[in-house]
Length: 369
Image (cartoon, rainbow, N blue to C red; front, side, top):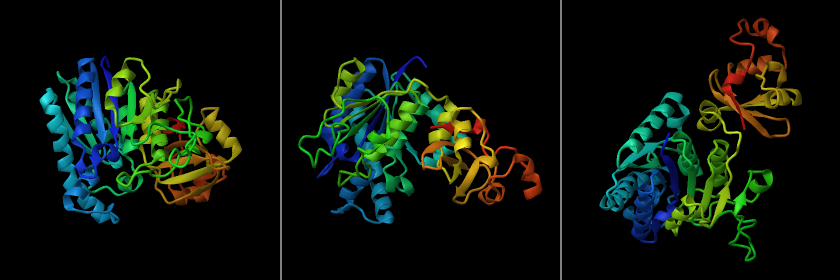
């Protein structure tokens, strides 16, 4: 790809105000996008705010509490949100395109590729179309509960092989402690790697309107940086600072550095596009073979399994101490694995009466984390 690509994730607290959608912020964002396009960038916006916009239109004074209430607010707010983006982008000569996704759309490999092709086509127009992506909150369940637009933005950055992922938030970046509780909290300007110590700094949701917190932002950073894409977490109150970022100046915020050992496309999909259905806990020998030896997972290396799943489902590979090692596609269902756990591959057919494969998870269908 020859064009430079940037994904912007905009949170609910950025695009809404106590009176509804924040037109001033959206206009400043649109002007920044137009400026980026003039500089040769292709921009994709992943936006929250449908539930917040619908809540105000419906006259709901509180944050929606039940799933049907959230979905109703999203159904009303989705059109309002898209109209707001179109109204600020069109006067600047930019067309916009609405794309509604759920995690399931990216968990299916063919639909994943279809989404990639659609985005590619939109960005190839001259002038480029600005895709405005949101989760399909009027029918989604998990996405509403866990604030997955942060994760979605990282997956979209993968799809278009972006040079940058920028997450706008109501906070300035990642702090060494909660700035709402500690006046001496310090902003971390750069995070070379997402370590357990960094993960421990994440807190819960900080806004009445949004559903995502720092936990989901770190999850997005993990996905993006593993894909070779740096991520900037910064305030959404000054979107024009993006120009500083693309021109090599410090825009303020926290920069999460990209990993040099970038995953290839299918491995990225295996690691982050799928929603695991179960867990395979492996012993120390199997963990070493998988992580350092590039080996497949054999039944002899499994300590025990958790969850109910079928052959072909995605699963997590966990160490005995609870560390997630990898994700992959299992060749066996959970009930079959329970019967062959700890046994040699040569024994599988005698135990089950058949043997689809020697490996429980083949190395070609396994992605290390």
